Length: 389
Image (cartoon, rainbow, N blue to C red):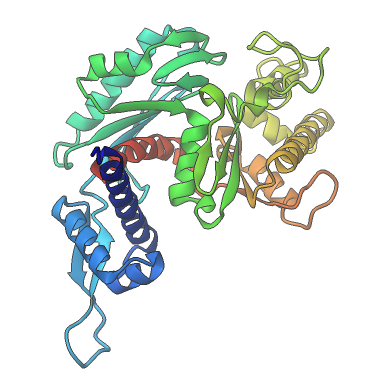
């Protein structure tokens, strides 16, 4: 009699239970075995066996509680994640450069390096070689760090199975990114994903999304994109293409987009779209100059930013009506690097819903400018923890 199916079911059940126990420890920060059993509805014996396994591989530490109020018996032992024992490297590729950081299991950026240059003007191979050089540099400059188990890379575009299928921002097509990065770095555990999906992972593991069952992350920067989390899992769609809201056509006769279509949402909201409009008034203006002009109440800047805010409201309305999430989280360099714009958004969504504003809570991400780097590191963790657990 073939029992392979039963053995597989047992293996998957044990793997699922290990993930559940690790997740409880990670989320609580400090927790006892009894508390885990109560949270997960597993027996204390099952929890004990799993905890011993996690302690054995070094991903969890068990220590006596610092609680001195108890006068009877031994102090309870508490479990916590060995946050600096397993580290990853997270890399963000954007139009204006590459950014790398060493990330621990609590989403803290321990070290960071960046290399500014016009990525969209370079071939994929050239950029990935520079990414590899930055990875090697951040590792060589920090020899005291524990073993780096994995590298996660976040990049704009349609990315599936380690291949950048198409990136209109970078002007790349069918790039075997993981294969090339493994070759250039000599590191086998390299993973790549769309930058907004990576940011969504970070929000779910470390940010605002971890407290909600369903959430949407909307990013504004050199592109406009979203990631959808349902029951703390990314909805990816066919070939990982879900969430490409920046390429929804809102005007078939509108601005030409990099993707080859007209009237895409990002041609009205992305940073380069804002600059294109502003430079019709002042040829050499920067984004900082645009928001300074807005603060100075210059009519053209007020009209331009007001229009961007209306498109943002429409975008949020589309996401709310399509996915009905508990929360919509706003992030991206356009928000993170420009306080005037961030304050404007926070003021707009501080009050009860009206106009385009939907029922979900709308908040600016609290992960800050390193959110995508953390997301790339989280991508590495998702894959490595799946192997370890």
